[in-house]
Amino acid sequence: MKRSSERFLTTHVGSLVRPAALRAIIGARENEQPYDEAELTATLRQAVQEVVAKQAEVGIDIVDDGEYGKTGWNRYVAERMDGFIHRPLRADEKPQNNFDLSDEATKFPGFYAAYSVLQTFDWDSAGEAPAAAAATLAGPRPRRLIWECVGPIKYKGQAALARDIGNLKAALRSAKVEDAFLPVAAPMSARGNWLNSFYKNEADLMTALADALKEEYRAIIDAGFVLQIDDPFLADQHGKFVAQYGEKETRRRLEQSIELLNYALTGLPEDRVRYHVCWGSWNAPHTTDVPLAKIVDLVLKVRAQAYSLEAANPRHEHEWQIWKDVNLPDGKLLIPGLISHVTNVVEHPELVAWRIGNFVSVVGRDNIIAGSDCGFSQSYNHMRVHPSVQWAKLEALAEGARIATRQHFAQRSAWDHHTPDARKEPTR
Image (tube, rainbow, N blue to C red; front, side, top):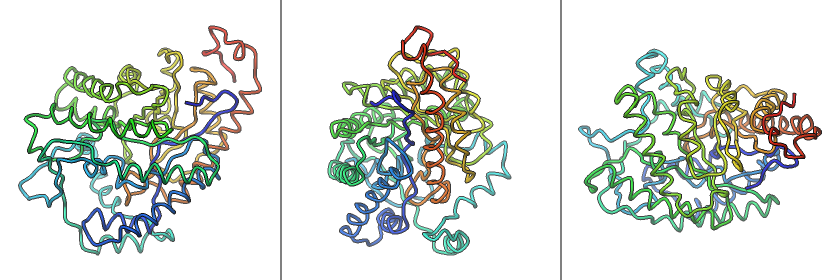
């Protein structure tokens, strides 16, 4: 994995806003409506070509395909597994929900009632939100479908993954970009709202899922890309679990989730893996978020070289300071989020540079890659910011990294001589 040895490199977390044409075709497939597979293939190939070129244009060094080939960061997983059927959810069924907002919703019921309505609003391709929202609210609601595990879980997504890898490789050649990553969910975060009608218990289901996901993990690394493991489960469900199980049992469950992930990563090179944790993608109070200090030891147990963490989120921005006391192991990297994904306010490049400087002061210049808090579109039909704002934010990230490069890479002394205290040396 490349380091910021000559300048601050830039990347992001992965999911980018899909173009309208692609959203329409994937939506038809998702809702089991008629669609043209050849049209999907051609539209997806062109969309990946354009999104990679746009990332390069705004100054992102380590790019991806925007996760354009997936219905969502973890929603696509069951589609690539044998052992599942997709069917309408019956009124008496309550599938397991690994991502439950109920804990904070009890503290802010008025906000969450309003927020659930706001989330139905969408931007059309021209950015005319009111018309698109009206159509969404007035139109027929799709059936609520559910995935049910009815047999052994085995990976069958080879063709879909090969398509995604091929599209990204072709786009990289066209854009003359060398470095890329592809995200996949960690086993516990990949566990969707599925019904289990086959495995005798949850542990058996999760082990089978980890075994199947490992095939996708390895294929991404074998293709020459960096593998990003997405695992919001570790942080954003902490409050729910504490309320339900207490602190001790919550800790045990989180430790098990890390053990399961490391089991899935067994045999894969750590220097080709980066690990992403966030506190959820919704624009909400976040008052029940677990502090980073309580889970950072678990983060550092993951067999990865780089750790991608939120640092622009105002609930967590101050937590860069924990690295004054927590030792980042030798050879490891931080990818702090320096721009937010949940607000349409575009960060000033000077702010980005200042945030980079904070991390330089605690973990060292070469150990930082500038990133974003999370993805800008957690599913094919859901976007956190307007697409034009998304690109403005990424451009600000790149400009901030250039400013910080001028500030920090002109400085020599202990940094270039690798003195024992260089990692902690203040540079501002």
